[in-house]
Length: 254
Image (cartoon, rainbow, N blue to C red; front, side, top):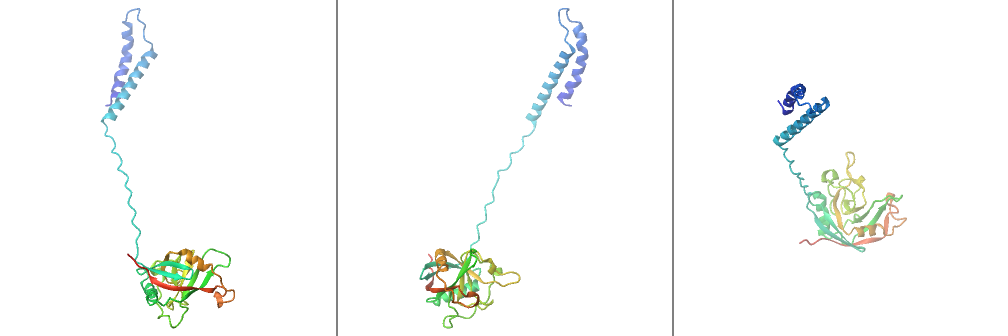
């Protein structure tokens, strides 16, 4: 039984006793009115309710503080093994990171050309841009199928297998059909993910990316093009003069 309930049961009999007690009072004492009696009871009930609430608050266990928020540390982005290669051209140098872990077959093919100096003296010979000015494009270079320079064709490694994509700075194998690529390549400007493999199309084999010197890539892309050179879809895309590849070497690493 609560204090408030107990007080209610005691207070109402007191109301009934108040009148007889008042009647026995001296004549000069004023008899309290029913309103005053009710006000006193209400005050007592309010005081009892407050006391009961305070008692409960004092005796109730305090809720435990919430555990400190812990932020799960972000997992570090996975890094893949790459080999740096510096390409020096007549317009400057840029550095590639060749994806030896994710695209091992295509990367090994490119590095064979580098190590055997088969790119030395070749050129960038093509710059593709959208006719309507849409951002994006690529430059193409390499051996131009010179029989004295090329090695056997490299098996196709689609982007659906390697996880790579044809975005800004990515280097990929130039080929007429999957598995026919040799010593020619192209480098993306902007994003051209239409070259990625799909469920219906094999796409092209990306195998690295530009990690420094992208301004050189853009300078090659903006070099003069001949309006007449080139066959089929490549007409009007051929650089004139071509941009010479002076050397291609593995970069020294510490």
